[in-house]
Length: 166
Image 1 (cartoon, rainbow, N blue to C red):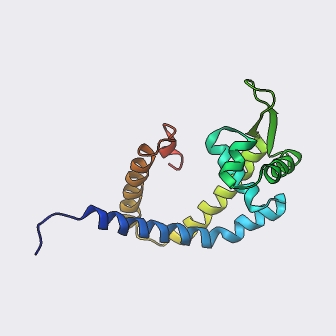
Image 2 (tube, one colour; image 1 turned 180 degrees about the vertical axis):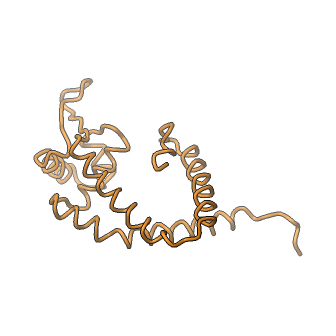
Image 3 (cartoon, rainbow, N blue to C red; image 1 turned 135 degrees about the horizontal axis):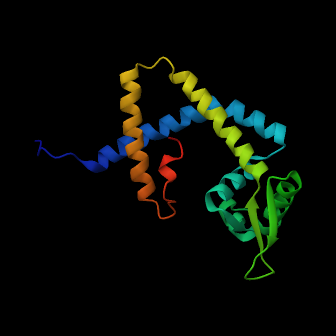
């Protein structure tokens, strides 16, 4: 017997599954471009994840990165050393405690992440090129609303971030 109300838990689960499938499809189709860029830059997956983490956080200590990657301090320090040598990050003493090192993304690191993003966007745009314009418009509006909601419910949200892909 229907009560006329929508079960938001089931709807949220359904939306979450659709978004998971959407993201998996995007990642599957852009994986070869991402791997090509990583090979050219001689990056491992943990190094690429570190670059994304630094872009989102702005700056981080070796311990912050270690915690994010769930690696040992020695492995994380070595990973950051390789990123410094490659020019993708810089490392300096923390202003509050010289024993701690602050790691920040360089312009070269930002450019590399931009290249990965451009490759992903180009791949998805190519696959969506034949989608009917009305469906494209509806999907844009719907996904924009979802992103705004998710950004505003994120405690680490940076104002204006939801417009990054606009």
